Amino acid sequence: MHARHVTDRDSIRLQGDKLMVERACGPRTERCEFCTEWVRVSPVSGHGSLIELSERGKKVVVGRFVRPELRGQLADEMRWALAQRGDVRGFVPGAA
Image (cartoon, rainbow, N blue to C red; front, side, top):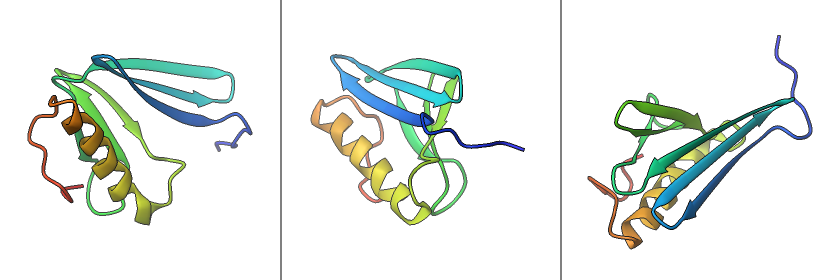
């Protein structure tokens, strides 16, 4: 059984040429960096599923604190932010 903690969170930041993800669950914190030139944003399965960020074999899943019906919008917004930098590969609006 997994209990939620008040400090549980996913934090996603776009800074320079890096997309940085920090996932906190209880006392554990996982950090991952992706190169904006190569990162892909895709659903884990279908509509409303969690969002997978991947780059050259490195993967992390985000969106667990976002309502399922809003996860597609979050993925679209991440793709849009990356596209504004001219870095995202295969950008297709609404393809979450």
